Length: 153
Image 1 (tube, rainbow, N blue to C red):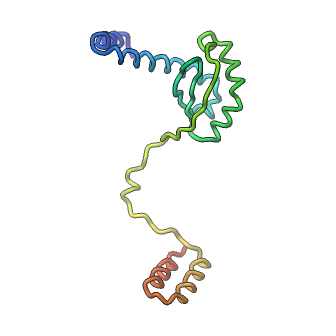
Image 2 (cartoon, rainbow, N blue to C red; image 1 turned 90 degrees about the vertical axis):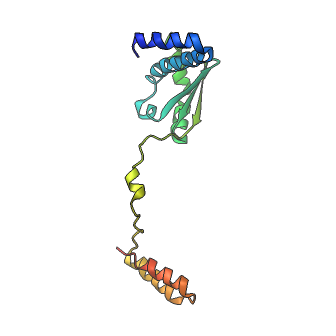
Image 3 (cartoon, one colour; image 1 turned 135 degrees about the horizontal axis):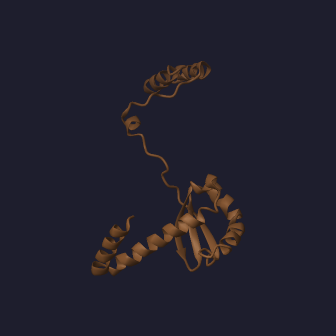
């Protein structure tokens, strides 16, 4: 963000909403912390993490899944030791990891509109299903099972 834009935002916020100023400052602080903190986290895991909050000398890191959370939890002491050597991070005394799955890909909208093809069965599975269908007395259920049996490779 350019300095001129920052000045315009700050001027507006000073005139209109003190609450927005505190939110803006918090977001700015979290962005700075994130850029520093994530230099200490392995990039292999960092891409699945987001900085959630910083409060009472404790940070919360949101992770994509439990496996990443567990891996990073084992590294907590090492990370805190590294943070203590950085003047701008030395106030951090604890790290909390929370699992929050977030969308990391854009959905393919075209595929949802296309007709889905039924799964393909092996010839052996189709044969077994057809034999089962022949033993069923209910004609509607038999027809469904025979239709399923036709989905072979």
